Image 1 (tube, rainbow, N blue to C red):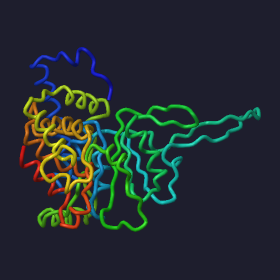
Image 2 (image 1 turned 180 degrees about the vertical axis):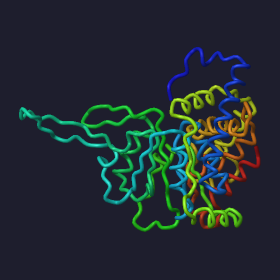
Image 3 (image 1 turned 90 degrees about the horizontal axis):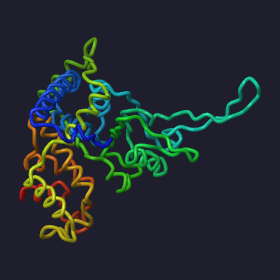
Image 4 (image 1 turned 90 degrees about the vertical axis):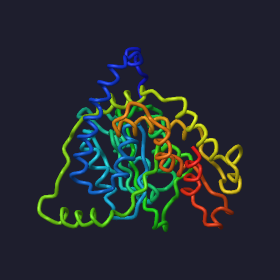
Length: 335
């Protein structure tokens, strides 16, 4: 994210309110467009959009057939982003993502190398079934997600701005997969769990998606406008009580200096990046709900998506049937 200019850091209250109202109107239109295509799944849509508004990446986890791919495609269209999709497979090579140099010969017989950009040179990259690629290929995506540039043949090449990765993962079929390393999981701002729709939404899916001419989303904003909203979110005020809640939650989830029983249940806990993610996502969620400042309730709502992929349970906890979600819920209830 670009550094904020001096003008941006000295906004008056009236300017902040006006900008927030305009952003809220844009977000409402985006939600309406997504709702034309994605039925139900309000929480998954909210969390994914919050991750994008915060300027980060998200890992979408759910069984096949829950419209993960369609959600990513629809959001890319509504946000006016240039999108690309990579189907991750065991034989996928780093050059299939980053691009490669090819040797060309001109009419005079002179030879030179030309770099052909890979699909990572886009504004919204969908990494479909990311855990099916080898660790070597996964690591090729790591630098771009964190540093927003790639290194090819000794040259640094900047990625488009904004740049977001929305990756999907099937939680059931683990045969022939490569679990994402902790370092790469930490690069995802949020893990968005996508569950089965309720009966009313599934009825609507049956009717709406099996007739001629399915609904399609239209572009609501463009990349420049998305960047403006992301900068506005970084300027939203955060109260001391919210900052304290973030610190309490993140630190209490660590086995070393955490809450009572954490050493027994948690092998390793979230680092400072988790607190940064909570701070950004809480602001974005507040704006998503039409508020100018986040509350402690935002921290409770975001604790699961932000922390669950940044923690690991001990063998004793797993043997007792304790889940990461249960640990996070218990800590959130104490805020």
